[in-house]
Image (tube, one colour):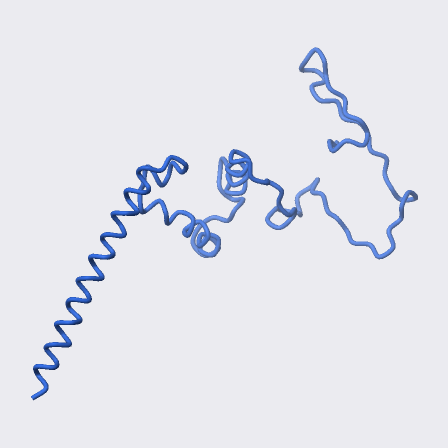
Length: 152
């Protein structure tokens, strides 16, 4: 009768299950100790083991926000794009990002770059004017050069 074989297989599977649970608990304990003793990431130190999921959840958030939550530039007073910029700047990471992808380009004063097969060099170019910063608010206002990045 195969019942002895079935019981042996079930016993082996039960031992394997308990062993895998033990290995999982041991791994969580090791991660907990590693997270509590490290000093580089505050989130992992304050929320050990769970704090490791932050980066995965941030990555998955871009896919979930479009269905459930606000978009990158809809939150107030500081939207997600501004917070991401501040986080990158505080960690001395390159803050350069592509322009125009999530910004509202239909608002008045938005800068648009139009493609042109044969661009005109000087005939249609506009003269840029200088901008004075702090004109009525300080003793020594700053006036930019006409080729500066500050435009009226």
